[in-house]
Image (cartoon, rainbow, N blue to C red; front, side, top):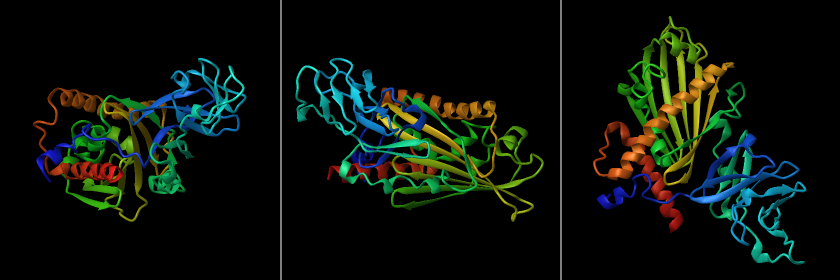
Length: 350
């Protein structure tokens, strides 16, 4: 690949894939009060009708361009512009112009396909005719619909960086040993042997450790015995370009046939702009962890460590560009992921 072509892979240098599903919001965020949000540099308004259906429309009234998110839902059916009272149906067509008897077809706004699964809303920002719900990442694979597994409600963070920087972070677990040192790793994970696999739109990177003994705080987090050793397998699976899931499996070293402890961390990254990313985070366990509020806050703190690092990286990238970025062996999956996203963008352009 040419140097100029490689440079196009750097975060923020290219457009976004649009004919894919992105997580738009947590279900509880969308009510009968219009919610303004931006995806892929596009303003969108989210709201619910009286029968509970979630709707996503372009957040701009065609009349005088006021954001429709500044309006209100009327009669459980119509989104009313807050400027001149023009009303829109859930399909985006104009239902009423108060100052005249007819509603011109040119007054319609774009509706974006929206699917509600589990406690997430998925949005399709591309060609609506290609919006096949079967292309949404398999929720059993994610662990959300898997019998016997337990998912937290999760949280949303706004990251002041390009979404691909978060993908770099998620697919390379070596940073656990340093950025999250003493919290998620004792320091040995970075040097563990790893393997990678690519299959269509998915990319996997796995690491394995033998006979790991966890300090008390980590043992409590993983719900394992601090006085025993465990064989640890960590696999990060990225469903390009929207979702990554880190799967940790711990097996008792002395009793490998015992039921393993599994903990998954799902991160759905949805770009708002070249320098702003919506990050939706969920924890899933193979046991009922009964997380305390302090533990839930601690989970958020861990992700906020990533946030601080990635926002600092974005700042340096803005100052110096891609010059000086040198990849190492552990970056092989991150570079492949960048290339996969670039190929998706090029495929849509073609």
